[in-house]
Length: 305
Ligand code: AMP
Ligand code: ZN
Image (spheres, rainbow, N blue to C red):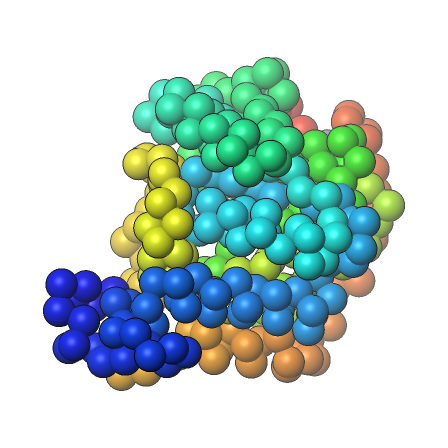
């Protein structure tokens, strides 16, 4: 965002005649920026066929800028696309990350927007904590947490009759994931980086990524422009921020502010010719959830105890 105290520095809004207050890619006044953000989301929803009439969409909200902005814009688009929206917030029950406030903040966010709010504690849902698993595993907290989150999001959505699961993955995430996986030779993963991942098993809920084409900076600015309260510590303290790809992409950003938007847009259009290893789907012999092995990733972790 540029200096709002001196709007003349960034010129006139791209959409109207007012002085612009925000410049991420193009200059906008606050109202036009909000419209621009929501129109881009609507375009992705239509273009990639993310939402159909009467869909039940569960959006996973961590309490951070990305998922809260995503949920806010989705709540405004409910009438345009005629769908039902719910929010799921998970308390990962890690001492350093557990945030009593986040349950309250996300709950209040939902109440004022008339969105059904679902709250799940890792400990209650899974019967174990990340700390207990960590004590028996070589995997780091982030990877244990991510496995459990994926498991709960899919299972909770299905058990509560939601047919779509939305996450707040944005253009920055997609671009970073792409390069990381490309350089590690995980080509099959790259084919998944799309705004829509259709269900490939009756127990797998279709995934949608409505802010696939939005930048983290745009999400932060949209949250501020809408006076959305963000939970301070929604990024957990274990998160390994020192990802060298952040710095590399930052350098490109300085030359092309729209680089990640254009890159994400390209990912939507390109069909990669890497055959996903024909994954057979089983149902986990412990919990019955879909898995490509005999035992699902979540039960494999729980079985360490
Ligand atoms: P992350 O892997 O932390 O970057 O999160 C990716 C997406 O997962 C977020 O945009 C949310 O949609 C969802 N998510 C992450 N953490 C939580 C949480 N504690 N509760 C609900 N959804 C979450
Ligand atoms: Zn299982």
